[in-house]
Image 1 (cartoon, helix red, strand yellow):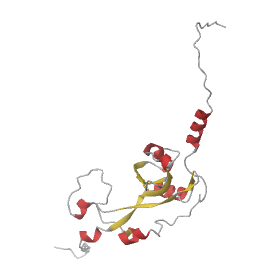
Image 2 (image 1 turned 30 degrees about the vertical axis):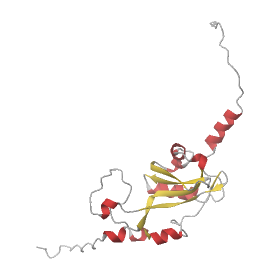
Image 3 (image 1 turned 180 degrees about the horizontal axis):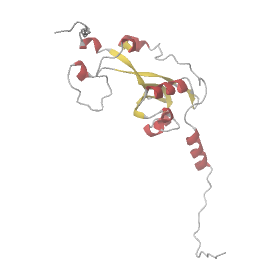
Image 4 (image 1 turned 60 degrees about the vertical axis):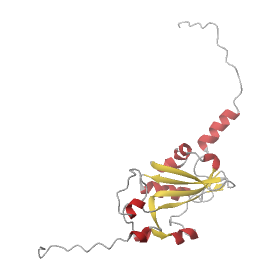
Length: 195
């Protein structure tokens, strides 16, 4: 029985799982990058502080090969915090890596198949959605296929400039490139004299 001053909760909207199977939701801690040169297609390299690790702690990084003829790969980077993803997109979008332009935006995710079937997900590390996301973050498959939209509205600050990578790797390549081959000969006897 309700008391006079007790607020009445509005009824929950009816959940229809079939309406969510073709929906993608913008995930604000997920960054999608295309245009990474193939030679950097290594999880440890991309997670390093010279690359995408400098923007925040990375929970997961997945590298996708685009095609055999293309000399670039794409990557999905899941940061622990949304602020890290925002910083990454702001700094890296439209910047260059070895003369190749990088495109960087928020990534999207889909609803977990277990969630859509109203079952408990068996994967404790599942990265898909297990609750209904915000409507303004939802995109249909058709909207995703057009590819004519950016999933962020941040001001690009490093357009056409090198922003990530190269420093550590160029230095190490340079050191090995010019190293002279000298054999070290162990002395037969070492004398120590006190001062």
